[in-house]
Structures are given as C-alpha cells and as structure tokens.
Image 1 (cartoon, rainbow, N blue to C red):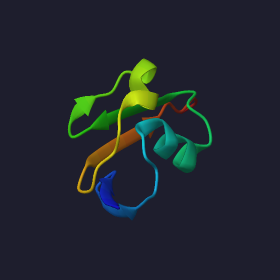
Image 2: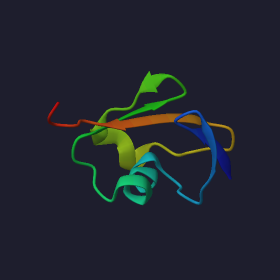
Image 3: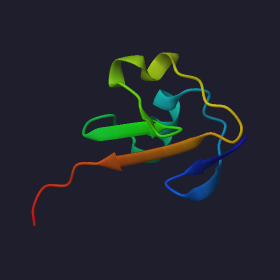
Image 4: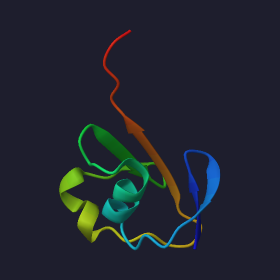
Length: 65
C-alpha cells in the first residue's frame, strides 16, 4: 500500500503503526506518531491498522544542540 510518511509517498507492507515504526526506526523508544493528524498513543500502536492513503508523521527526540 502507499501512504504519506512525513510528507513523502512511501510504499509499505506494515499492517500497523507499530510495524511501520519498527520498519523505519528499529525501535519505539523516543518515537512519536500522528496518524491522519491525530496523535497515536504508544499503547495502541499494535492495534492501529494502516490503510491505503493514510498520512503518518513520525519523529524522534534528539538530544544535544
């Protein structure tokens, strides 16, 4: 399926938000996700499916300056 990930088209087979995060970051530590402009609580990532055309914005906390 094709989704918009951080403003860019992305082809993915990830069935859930959790799977997408693991594909993109390899960890869930320090990651925040919005799906279709709504924050997705980390505790629900395994239960939130992705669909064709979804918009996902994900970011990580960066330490330092």
